[in-house]
Amino acid sequence: MALVLHAGNTNKNAFKALIAAEYSGVKVELAKDFEMGVSNQTHEFLKINPIGKVPVLETPDGPIFESNAIARYVTRLKADNPLYGSSLIQYGHIEQWIDFASLEIDVNILRWFVPRIGFAVYLPPAEEAAISALKRALEAVNTHLACNTYLVGDSVTLADIVMTCNLVLGYSRVMTKSFTSEFPHVERYFWTMVNQPNFKKVLGEIKQTESIPPVAKKPSQPTKPKAKEESKKEPAKPKEEAPAPAKEEEAPKPKAKNPLDLLPPSKMILDEWKRLYSNTKTNFREVAIKGFWDMYDPEGYSLWFCDYKYNEENTVSFVTMNKVGGFLQRMDLARKYAFGKMLVIGSEPPFKVKGLWLFRGQEIPQFVLDECYDMELYEWTKVDLSDEAQKERVSQMIEDYEPFEGEALLDAKCFK
Image 1: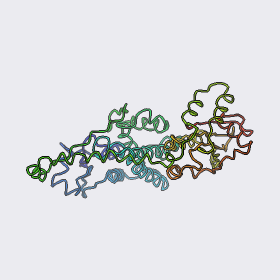
Image 2 (image 1 turned 90 degrees about the horizontal axis):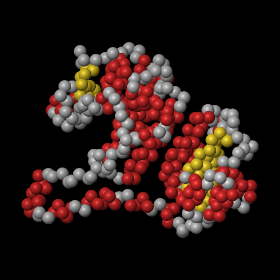
Image 3 (image 1 turned 45 degrees about the horizontal axis):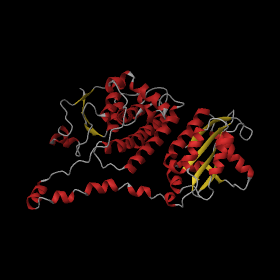
Image 4 (image 1 turned 180 degrees about the horizontal axis):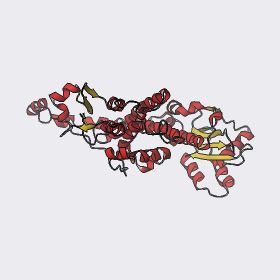
């Protein structure tokens, strides 16, 4: 007898159990004629899930709701199922990635997508926070997949099923090619997974979105019986309430009150330096480096060296470079106020990671220290410009001078 899964046929949370069933040889069927918003509000459905959410699985022993729980149940129906690994530590890692896929990937994709289609209030700061958190999570997955084909072990597990189903919504609705190209190992992994026969049988053909959906217009205030009574007494009332949505639109304005925006004007225009850096192709020392010191304002800006604390861990070149790339991505929040150079140094492991940063103000901005967790992985030293050796070191780091401090450069990345 087949298990019955109550959900629509496009529900990515239902896909988890259906794909697990394909791998496990378990028969699971979608409830016939299921209509979201109708079927799940009936008295019969509310008996099996009191809050009316889907999916819900009907079993001979009673109903199960919550998609990950359903997928686990289906997987456990097959004894010694390889979807749960071959050892206790693999089981632990599978559960770890299931939680990560739910709490770090799925949550932030939804926080990005749902407000844009009008199902939640859209606030730009909240969207920026969701995208930043999603990038941080994807960078962690990307680093892991740099050395692994699957999340756990050498074959598909339940962790891969849950992760891929959660990524499907992102790839198909908000994560464009320009966004996902920052995470090449995640891209390789995702397209490999969705083209596996058991995945494809359930998911069908997945196409990546070409654009992020525009923000939906705010829905009009719902009309309730009470509102009708008020309109009879005072027809103009709805017009008086109309300004309310404007308050939501004005909510992002406090974001402009960054303490760095309140500092006295600086003679150094950061964008002009960034343009000079980007456009100088020859005679870099004579043009760009000289231009930097001519522009530099020691009262309005400060320079900082950073040294990675755990260089002994940097034994794989591309993993080390990915680590630095992730750091720069997470520094996006400081782009208006900073310029940086990060060097990966050495011809053999362990590789050293050193950097130079230009920040607005005399200290490292507090919001950067609070929001970018990478900051605590580095030792930070303020540049003493009265020391000519330190000043020359700044020039060499901007220039990608090689050999740097007697060693070859493996990679040099710029934040601008």
